[in-house]
Structure formats: structure tokens, C-alpha cells
Length: 278
Ligand code: ATR
Image (cartoon, rainbow, N blue to C red; front, side):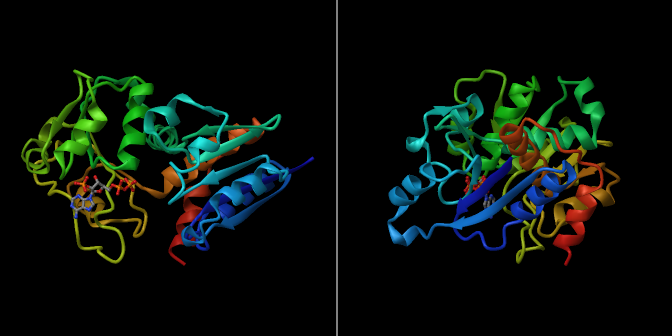
């Protein structure tokens, strides 16, 4: 058989997903294609596009901005992560039904554990999540799902952080200034905002002056790969975790949902790094 996958969103001409999924297909010696299906938000043709995709022979597709929420009413089922996050980035077509998933958070945790397997040994470690947008929400729920329970969310807007925490008594919410001052409490620091992304490469969300010795510092921004935040972590001899690995592992999980096969990830982060660095 030949698989048919795709991506809907706008703008997506520069998406790295076709590159990643083509790698997976060829590595596993599977026939298939992954196409870009750009849907212009101003066309008002979303209904028709969904209808067209329903009638196509796609086995599954990814969903990105601005359709991660808009696509939900068109689905027959929603998995737990997608439900908790309220957004879908992967759809699997099975016997004519569409099932929606969100692979971002689980993909992030997979990428982290693959870089630092020892973090699985101590699920009681103190985790600081910087940011409270869609990405933070996905990572928060995936950490919880993987039994990492001690999470503090720091965000510029406290209300948004409270919305993620909801009534979870274990999770704390603090300001960015408090995060900076109390940084030495945390064993793992995860930067989930867009701060530091090209072209604003000199920005950082907080100073790492008070970082705990040996704390793992992670940044989901991957353009540039070595953000100012990660540069500072490196300077302070902290182990670092790069954002492009999340991209690879969320794709790996999507591919697994579509095919039941798990691509091998060795070497892919280096290859993607070369692509990103042109
Ligand atoms: P995404 O889905 O990529 O997470 P988002 O939902 O727009 O994007 O969330 C962006 C996150 O980056 C939020 O946590 C946002 O903080 P607010 O909730 O206070 O807006 C954060 N963010 C963006 N620019 C920021 C800045 N200059 N300083 C601090 N936080 C910033």
C-alpha cells in the first residue's frame, strides 16, 4: 500500500514536516507521500476543504496554525491530550472516521527523555514552565500524563497560567519576576514562549543568574537553535535541550499513530540542524 499524509494550515510553504515524514517513510521503506495543503484563512472555504479532505483517500494529516481549534467540530473522536489542550495537530482517518490527537506535548516529553533519560528516574523533580500559551498547555498536560507532578507555571499574564493550572492543587503559578528570583528551586526549566525567536534573537524571557547547578534548561524555540536563553544556560554549565527535537518527536508520534510503526531517531536531530542552518 501507499500512504497518503498531509498538512493543513496557513502559511505552510516553509514547513519542515514534509522533510521529516519523507525521512520516516524512506527509513522504514514505506511507500507514501506527505503533501502541503495550504488553506487561505480569508477564502472562507474551510467547510468545503474539510468536505474535500473527507472524500479524499488521506490516511492522516497534521493541522497547524490557524486551524488547530477550528478543525475540532469536524472530528468523530478526540483523544485525551487533544481534549485537555483544546487543540488538535494530528488527525487519523480510520474506517471513514476522523480521530483527533495532539502530539506536541507527548512529543516534547519524548524528546526530553531521549536527550536526558535520567529525568525519568526522578518524577518528583521541580519543573518550571515559562509561558502559558498553546505550547505550554500541551507540555504541561503531557508532563502530568507522564507523572511529573511538581510543576510551577510562570507567565507574563497570570490569568493565562491560572487557566492551565485550573483546580490542580499541586501546580503553582508565579510571575516571571518571581521565577527569576526563585530560580534555584528548579531542576528543569522549560521555555515555551516565542521570546528569543528570530528576528528578536537578543531577547530572553528571564535571567538565569540564580539557576541551580546542573539544572536542565530547555527552549522550544528552534530559530535560532542556540537561543540567547540557551547560550546563557551553557555559559552557566547547565545541560541544555534544543527546540528542534520537539518538532521531530511530535512528528514521530503522529507517524506512529498513522502507521503503527515507530521511526528510529538516531542522527535525525543533527540532520535537521543542518537543514535549519541552511
Ligand atoms: P503558542 O501557541 O506558540 O504557545 P501563544 O498561545 O500565543 O503561542 O502563547 C505565547 C506565549 O508567549 C504566552 O505565554 C505569552 O505570554 P502572555 O500569555 O502573557 O501573552 C508569551 N509571550 C509572548 N511574547 C512575550 C514577551 N515579550 N514577554 C513575555 N512573554 C511573552
